[in-house]
Image 1 (cartoon, helix red, strand yellow):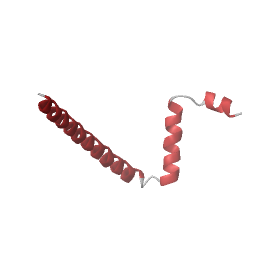
Image 2 (cartoon, helix red, strand yellow):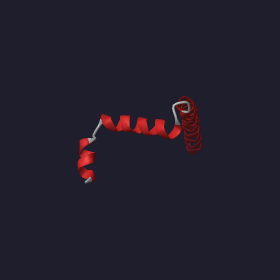
Image 3 (tube, rainbow, N blue to C red):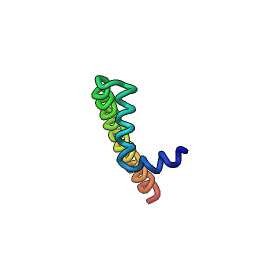
Image 4 (spheres, rainbow, N blue to C red):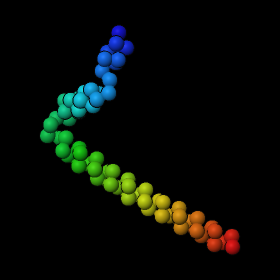
Length: 68
């Protein structure tokens, strides 16, 4: 039963279904606030990722200098 439904709804249709579900769940007024929060979280994640990469690079350099 559901296999026919899932094969009928494929690709880009899922995006529209998810957007409609989000609008129903959170309401149209909350979506910009959620997007802003998501954007801030993504920026914070990227910042943390860059900092972690720099610390790892410094740690590797410190280990290599101790070997020599």
